Length: 86
Image (tube, rainbow, N blue to C red; front, side):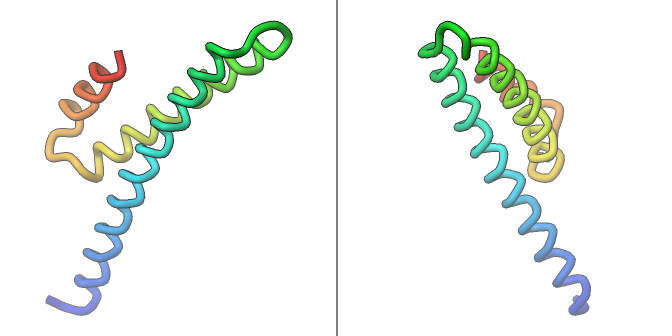
């Protein structure tokens, strides 16, 4: 195996690990956002709801990237993740 191939494999492994970690971090952020939403009333409620929506969209995209990089069957993986969250 050439040095270039080894470096390419290392980069791919690092990319997959980073995607996995980011998806997990965003899952935790979304969970914290939900808690904040449950605790928020009055003037700030709409702002918090917007944050929740943005976190959801961001996490969905991170999950998609993670599944494409780290799963043999990305579609099944995404479906399983979404069922876990409901």
